[in-house]
Length: 421
Image 1: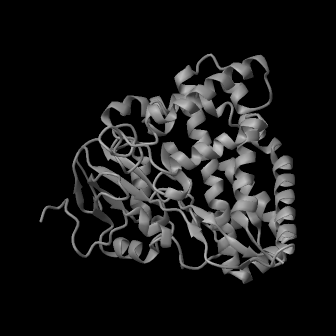
Image 2 (image 1 turned 90 degrees about the horizontal axis):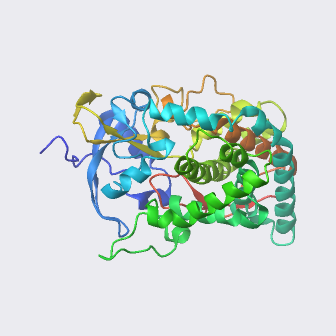
């Protein structure tokens, strides 16, 4: 058997359908203990064609090594999603900061960092807090008019993430539902509930939702929004970027795409995951309500427990070795954030939710040159939401099975029925 063929004893952690039943932490542990860099086959799934396979990296130290070593593990060669893009789409996809390597990546990151400053983000705190308070009050009222239960995703977390992002970007109120539409189409493309019926090409195969053809409507909108912001400047990110002479129009378009999708879905996935964790650990929730546990450390522990992103892909730029496995130039190397966050080699008792955990070197926002640009904004939103939840809801209790996203990329929760009275 070739070293690049998956052994029968290696668990399959590729199939996106598996994640609809929950993150396969038991299989991750098998991989960490026995196959820390394991070959995974990419079989045809849900109509998406088979791929060449990839190396799954599951230990914390190895994940960090891959993320920090951009010279060996490239974001640009094959982009950052497990599934290979069409070769003709690669030049287009490489315009996005996420799919670039240093030094090109550093230049674009510095440009957009001018807009994405902590000071600007902090100015949104009072608005975000009031939004969380209002959404939670409406959710509790809705539960009171029914049987005491409410779907917190539909009633709170989806709207909270969407409206906060729209404020930060400066998207007019009349256009804000577009952000959710684009997020569902791009992030949830493996899940029929999120993406709807896939668009097929002339051969009957699904069209990649990140292809230029599928993103044309978004980019048409970005150009119109940039024109509007130049004529009507405001204190938002799109105004700053639209007035930056060093930022090309194509770069502006791709940054809007990145922030719309990644910026929305990070909080959209993390928030219900954190609430679910607290509902499953009532003693931890009570400790937070009593002020015995600090919220900053709790936010990071909940991110470790439920990372919004499950995986990211790199491509080997040269022959190398990782955890004793020979990796050839051109091989896909996929880091598993959720596995790294439960690695016993990096965390004491990783299967225990410890809201006071310190240190907490989770990789939920990545590491290395591509560490999440919006991590400060995400932490702020989550802290405010949890603070307001502690006031509005004395006790969180699950009220039925939750709905999980069919995805090997995003750790998404589609519905979270909760008793809140």
